Length: 253
Ligand SMILES: [Fe+2]
Ligand SMILES: [Fe+2]
Image (cartoon, rainbow, N blue to C red; front, top):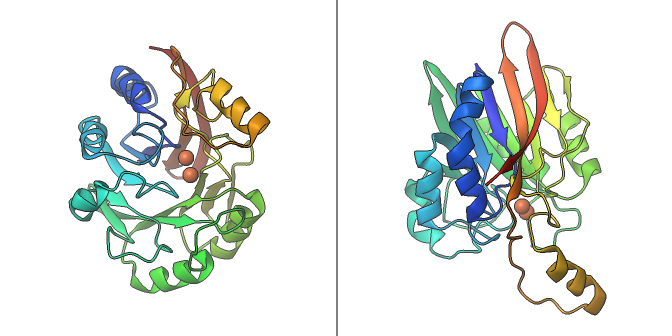
């Protein structure tokens, strides 16, 4: 089993890039299944039903989210029936804490957690939440998208849950790290990076972000409107030997 897990998809133009290239990526890298973080797919914040359906049509089997899960409030209307997992340490009745996805006769459980370092939302402890979920999950494989800012928190989570889950994959910083490793059979990377505009600041228009920092005035941002995009993520191999490989490629729209 070989899985491609894509980091945060930022903006609808990136969905177009995926429409043009995901099939050939799957063929070239012999990918059996694709998962993705899509918390930024709709105008950089949240996921509309239209864009959710477009990602599904691309063959993305499971979608994890992050701090922008509910940034488009229409998600409340469809998330319960969608192949989306929302952060389990948010306290809401909307959405699933565990998403089960089938691959042949195997079951993969997908979990999404928010880190608490440098985040401002009141959140349950991600470590204790994972303890609780491990008592519930019945699956052959468990993948965790740990959505947070701090590499220290992600790495602590990795060592704490190594041997108990199969992959712990970081998202949220939109910047791919070079610290992939396997310990106790658990695959790890602090951050898978983003799928978004190359000439940008984390996917957003760079002039608008610079203005924010120069003025301290938080006006809404727009996704960068350029033609060069990077698609980032990791490839997880569950062969005789487990392997985690960074993936990052540039595409022109
Ligand atoms: Fe993000
Ligand atoms: Fe985020």
